Amino acid sequence: MNETESQIAALGVYFDRDVAPVETFRGPQAVFRAQPGGYLEWLRPLGTIHCHQTERSAAFELERMGFAVVADVVGSFAQIIVFATKHREEVLYQVALATRLLREGGRLLVVAANGLGAPSLERRLMELLGSADAFSKHKCRVLVALKETARLNAPLRAQWEAAGAFRQVMEGGFFSAPGMFSWKAMDQGSKLLAAHLPSTLKGRGADLGAGYGVLSHALLSRCQGLEALTLIESEAKALEAARMNLTSSGYPAALDFIWADVTQGLPLRGLDFVVTNPPFHAGKGAVPWLGRCFIREALSALKVGGQLWFVANRRLPYEKDMEGIGLIQTVIEADGFKVIGAIKVRDA
Image 1 (spheres, rainbow, N blue to C red):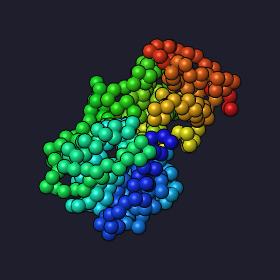
Image 2: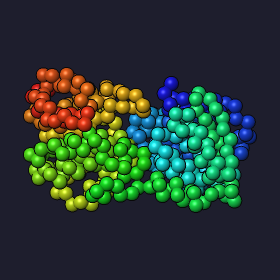
Image 3: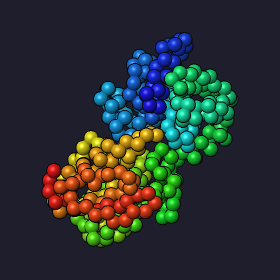
Image 4: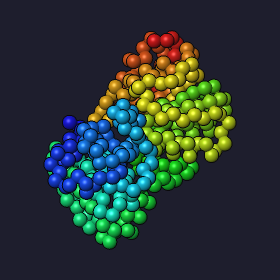
């Protein structure tokens, strides 16, 4: 099992063994970074479930199971679950927000794999709420605490809320926040690609896996012939940041922002160009098929004669996936990356 699967399994075992009276936590339920899993069926009889999930593929699975997905959680709740991620500041932000949203005496459960810092989170939760219990299973901990306002460390909560909020980062004042890829600074691959995008790109294009808009910003600033640019991003928080970063700049090109998982296909065809820094990791493991999927979808979205510009780890042989479809040129290799430009010569 990966860390997410282990966390879901650990929470399921905890609920199977839970001895708290059902009536104690009856009422609205909320789950931050909700994941599809059997634990949701345990929650269903207690009250309306508010599933917070900003990553599109997980949100799609939750919707397929019949659960409504929300980007923002508001209201008063009897019980809140927080699934930990690798973004510590985001996790602490969600824990802090949960303590505001819980009713007095409400229960908070933080589910964290040991590899995601469960022991540290346990200490932090005790620091915030005064006490916490821990249940261990599947190399994870389910941390359990009740809201008692008199024992709550309010200054610490305010600190965690501030640390997880949108803020300006990098030169140029890009808005970003914990919970998105390379949120504090432009990653080396994107930086290399942004520096080598040609100013001659024009017409209609797309930025796949757009993040908070750094490549789109480079395009819009450099390419005077752009008519329309569509940003596709699976993380809704990053897409919101991209909207903040680009729509206030007065660019003449028409901008569109689509919350979508590129691996599930694109609603775009006949584009003049596509740019992308395709992912090749999921969690801690390398998953090269992700990058290949991005390149395949990019080529499908291009018209014949359209251009694809992307950056990749120099060891990944994405060029083989383009043989016979595009004229390929490696523009530069540096810092372990390569920038590739290609012209689509025929449909696959």
